[in-house]
Image 1 (cartoon, one colour):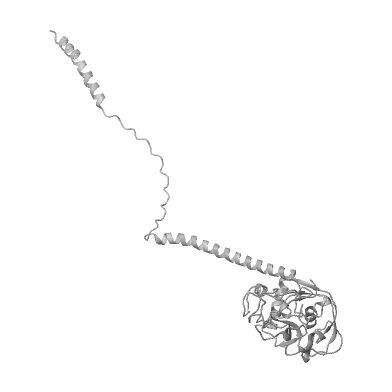
Image 2 (spheres, rainbow, N blue to C red; image 1 turned 120 degrees about the horizontal axis):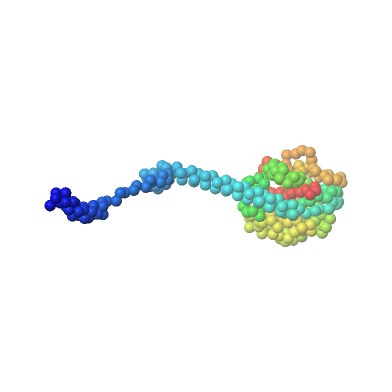
Length: 320
């Protein structure tokens, strides 16, 4: 056979085998891995500090800041509430005071040891004399501890209770109280003159000439030694007098504005007492007094610097 023909024949015979081998190689060849570009990594948030002893410093610092703010807010809130309550309390007491002022129409009366006062009169209640007064307002109650505390921020009383009359107050302390009260209200509260006090205690122009303020029977209108149990009582719990005023006999004595001095027989108009002296007048008797000391004309006096646990006050206004 021709050598060329032999080589051709061999190539034809080997061709299928080569193709099969190539197929096998191609089929088993591993696929090329395509790597996709990774997206940019997001910044990681810092982990919250662990609440354990290891990170206590960081945690405490954060918490401390919060607590400090909370504490500050709480303190501020408490202070605000306290201030509000204080303001509300003062406002409430001042409104009550204004509403409790009773109008006393001016008039003329006989001051001192008039006949209904009986045989209990003392020499300084004489001579009787005519007094003419202009109209004024007087509080139906003695100043309470609630009002005093609202204005002054303290309570000097021996017997404690909001609706009890304030006591253990000097005449001088009463002036401080009144000055502060006037600054809050814009009014001119003051202590009554001795004449204003007695006129009101007698019932003013509606007087029925009682021995005590509002009755001839002291137990009806007064807390005094026989029924007080050796202490003060809430204001306004006995009967009122002809003007609607309470406790002008008994409970606590009440400071007046006058210096204590002897009476004159001359008629007077709006008297204010002596220009000087050593003691100030107080009127009305108290829880520790016998009946004769609670009479409407009974007078007493004490140092303006001296407090007593049976001595308080009542307020007056010349005009509302």
